[in-house]
Length: 232
Image (cartoon, rainbow, N blue to C red; front, side):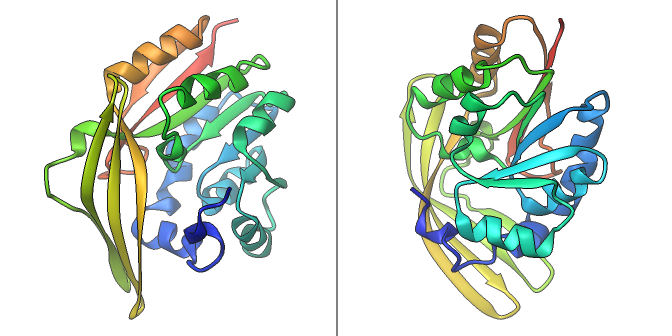
């Protein structure tokens, strides 16, 4: 099910580019794909998919028809798109590389969700896997995240925090954005992960891959990333 805030009421592409440094992400991701010449499954910011499409065969996946429609209109350079759940696509198609950026892992809100994602990725051999995660260590009690940018900004104010196990913490946010004088707000829940727990999860599920723990793909973002390279 597509969350209502991704059903077309908010121009997320504009939000990502103005307040979440989407224009820098492709430059940070591209070196991780330097040796990849096959198809790449990409989930994340559509402008990043477009930038990467200039040098790679990118298949952009999102489960929001509004996001895909907008991407097709604004970014014709994207090689192909699909409206679907990422895990379903991974289970069915042999992409050489998988890039799940834009903190897509934030929506893995059940303890078993990360293992189910690993199972779908492992449906086929992959040359590389790149994922980023919200970092639980960036949470400060009662302190909001602020994302300034041209023509406004965003404020994410945490309201409730629920830890599940050693892996992750669910955080309820009241989120507000101002874009060129227009205001929008909504409540949502994101998963924040422990770095060492994600590293353990990756080593357990992706045997035969070299693991690299990386800082946030966008400077200042409350996240971290991992890159896995197949050693075969």
